[in-house]
Image (cartoon, rainbow, N blue to C red; front, side, top):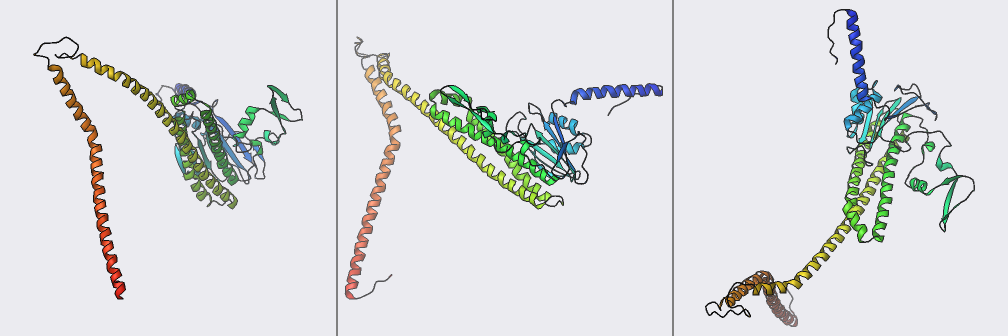
Length: 453
């Protein structure tokens, strides 16, 4: 709220209001103008499989037409309040503050806000991390507003016949250190491009089927989110395979470097963040299906597609769990290798102590400040028994120490011997009883009697 001071004269009051409003607007502009870092896309669909780009006015479609407005928040070291300011600048007006906060808040959510269905799968990790995902949607009958953190592959649409995957590829083959290019007509696909394409589990934006209804668009949004997660999991698997190959080929230096860099604990932390995102989706998407099934404009085919996506995210969760187990196993192997290295060093240290222990004993004996030490020329009769007395005390202390170490082993041996004696005695008694009963049975059989059970 802006507090105005009373000024004599209507003209002076109006001029003061205008100047203060301009200064306040200027300050707010410098504080919350983020149009250069936020990417916005707007599409309108005619319901017959065609779409057009439109201006950013956040209005709903009419009839068969429906609109889609997408906001890409920047990835970087931004706090949640800064991301909220980005979104307020992009969506207000016409959205209210509660609508915007329901899209940008952390954690899973699915429910109705101000008459619209809102769901979000926002992980609370740092925005700059590759394993922090944010996807939120506000759905009405004729419009969809989505918010994502960074670019989501294949989420948008591009003109047809511009997909790289629909072109005829040409590879560059390296032979004997030279590069040969085969000119057969087509696009040259280099090695780093192939590495990128192999991590993709989906087609490009030009191959996206254009949705004919809001329900198709909702399924498309969730499907692209799943593809994004699958891409990250695939990259993790490829990275983990490369690391395992390096460990097999590398020696001491490679293992030491991986232990010092804490590569696998960091990878395990990233996997836990990814599992958190997948768990959020596992909570939200069934509720989205349940709430959309009650909408008249949501068809049964789209409900079945959502059911398939829910099964897909569960399988993806199991796959990430397997990768986490692999990372834990590799880290356990490195820890075992580090323990072996420490044990080897301790062994060498013990070997050196064994070498120097007799020398320290000899120097300690001849360094005693008592009489009677041999080869020292001490012939005083009053002190000639000092060395013998010190040796007796040392022997007694050594006996006490040895007894403390040997007593548990002697006690266990004595108890084991006593148990064996008790078992032999009981076995002999049982054997005599069995022989006696067998003799009685033989006598009864000869007499034609019967055996009592």
